[in-house]
Amino acid sequence: MSALTTELKRGLDAPICLTWELTYACNLACIHCLSSSGRRDPRELTTDEAKLLVDELRRMQVFYVNIGGGEPTIRRDFFEIVDYCVDGGVGVKFSTNGAFIDAAMARRLASTDYLDVQISLDGIDAATNDAVRGDGSYAIARRAMDHLADAGFGPFKISLVVTRQNVDQLDGFKRLADSYGAQLRVTRLRPSGRGADSWHELHPTNEQQRQIYRWLLAHGEEVLTGDSFFHLNALGEPLPGLNLCGAGRVVCLIDPIGDVYACPFVIHDEFLAGNVREAGGFGRIWRESELFLSLREPEAAGACASCGSYDACQGGCMAAKFFTGLPLDGPDPECVGGDGELALAGVSPGSAPRPAADHSKPVRPSPVTFVRR
Amino acid sequence: MPSAQAESTQLQSVALGDRALELAPRVAVRPEPFGALAYHYGTRRLVFLKDRQLVCVVEALASHPSLGATFDACAVDARRRPAFERAIAGLIESEMIRERADD
Amino acid sequence: MQEQETLENESREGDEQAELVEELLIEEISIDGMCGVY
Image (tube, rainbow over all chains, first blue to last red; front, side):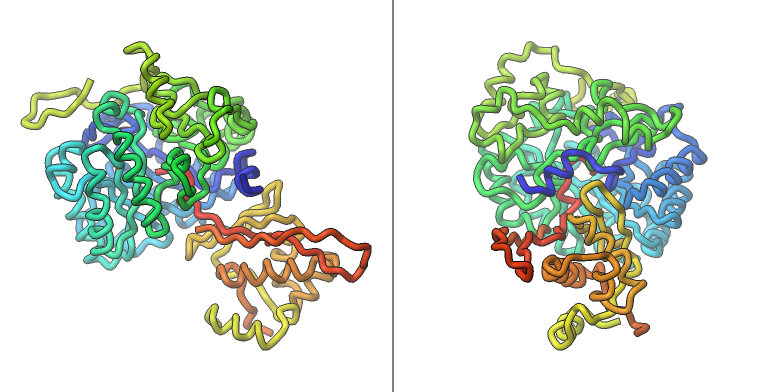
């Protein structure tokens, strides 16, 4: 473990960046949505509260925010908030399904300083993608990409969540990204939000995990992974990246109602550090909350202590363990050694923690049946 | 502004210690317990500065006529200066630091 | 992308003029290589 990762695990004086979900409202209903989004929460931060938060992030010298949701562009004050960030020296990267990126918006985005755009896509064809993200969502995403390209936006990102159904499409995704001069982001599915219900059907098989590992070894320098595959390092040579969990140490999540969580994949009371509306705001939570201070303590290997791979995989992902009902000081459910699968067999059905709140829209009869609870 | 390649050529012909340097315009340096984080808003690159005395040097560069003078001002021990020069050269290559035009 | 040069620490031999050979004092890190963000 290098000196750098040791320092980062101890926690920084301020996040390097953080994820900021602007709204739980969304025009889509992806079956694996980590924030269970759909309906706006009436307690959403107001425009003024959002700007006060940005002021604080500036004071703390947070370098940039990763804005998401739900669908952040649904908020009427989306550009007002974005411009306020950028004008104040806080960079903005935002994640979107692209539904509202028409030609005019694409031009506006192209003319905004320090703004990165990431379009979500989970399949290289409508059949694969729409099975997860809903009818028409593939076409929506491609249209947004075309508008960005036409507007001369420059390199945007295409971000996919790897599933059992799209693992064989990694080369295709790379070609798609290359065709736009875009950067590909390959991320791990966690059993978070609505993902808790679909994880067992969607998550890659053991053999597919090896396929992912080999692909990332071959292409990892050209793609971004959000460093979400470090649990695969137990398979051999470490993948490019920092290979550490930054939750509560380097990054965190601020949700639409101002709740601060360790990361976007653990929206649950267990990982709730506080709310920015409290006295002391975000800064106090980052520096002094019990949760974040405890995450910055050296972690215990626990049940993994005797495994030779622990240094490489570090026990995997907190969120993956938590929402599958596994203890945090034990193997990841997708442990490449198979220890996670063994442990899962001991979890009684229905006993795994449920996500904090469900912002999903009510289910209505539709031609396409989603896998939902 | 000289390109990185032109700068490295210049580095070969004139000692780094004699160059007048400064932080590149879109770089933010944020102190941390271990040293500092330097972030370039243009390139999106992030560099970890591992030594607090190095941070002092980086932040003082623009106020001194040369890197050597900055070392003096920050009381950098002569035996550490080669390592500091390697770090500064690395920061020039990462486009975090550049030569000052106003000499 | 990480760039890292690690030089071995040499033991000082009591020579005041000797250069201290240190690890590179900077390290570039890829923040996109950081788990926990979109």
